[in-house]
Length: 103
Picture 1: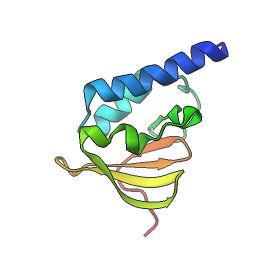
Picture 2: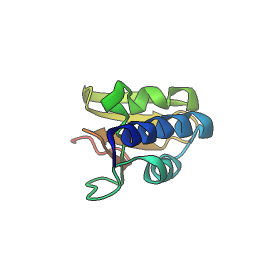
Picture 3: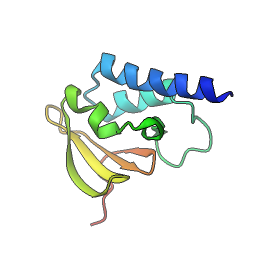
Picture 4: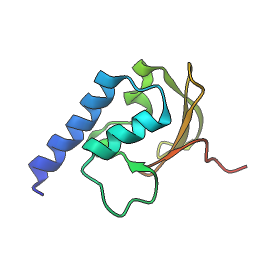
């Protein structure tokens, strides 16, 4: 994959999230799996490559009703949807359904 194609796909991820305004972890994961260029050798349920162009999954989902509930850093945080109560954990690009912070 060329660098241009990669960044075009990253832009498509961010656009798809903005258009769909997902309210569940499953919806976010489905969008990431469909559009994100990192589709193999995943550690999490999906991968978000948008941070490479200055994006942030939490910020990209704010207009859809998601907000930060915990953060250890800008690369390790949990967001929750205000309507459904569903959570996503972001760890260095890997996205997991649910709240996976240390207990």
